[in-house]
Length: 246
Image (cartoon, rainbow, N blue to C red; front, side, top):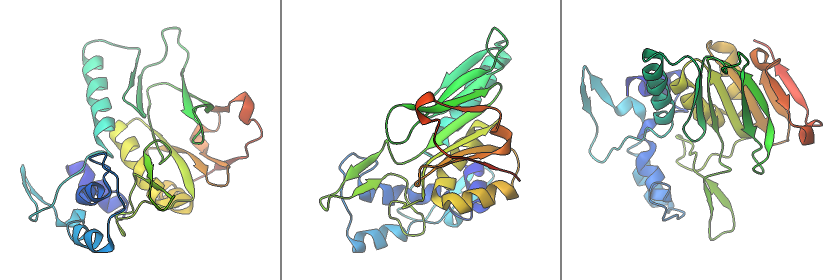
């Protein structure tokens, strides 16, 4: 909870764990998908705002009706806990996979890097391979969790905390690499909300992570720390790759 609130501040609200009532209004927490009325959305948005959460020592205070959603950090946090537990018990080579969140302990038994596939957002093919050791990875996008409304439009599960509506981003996939699994998880969601320019600005202003972004125009943006660690799959050799420096 402390980490999530701190990330809310750092990302200027792009990560907001109080979004749960709005997610429910859209049906993303229940599976009963619907396009909520503007009135219902306005009512639920009154409950959104990480700054409304009071945390003192181990006491949490919320406004009546507020609910917290740790979906953007929980799997990364779990990866960190599992990694630490395995390391404490003498494990020196392992890979942990929790649906979109992966954590590598050490390198492969043969000494080489783990080779981790990054899914192409438009299909189940591999966009390319990341070669990594002792790193965590998280990928976010709306291509796996969305519904088609009665109006025929697609509505993704990553909401804009400012509007309460599914994010219309110029990114279709955000992959974050770091030693910290919960940071990967939090940033893959919040940088999707920030969009391409916002994500790159955030990268230049903060340390401790690298990015692999796929934009709506089909181009890949790769931060310099991954330049020699990412290889496009054979069928995507013609995809433009832009290397981003600090």
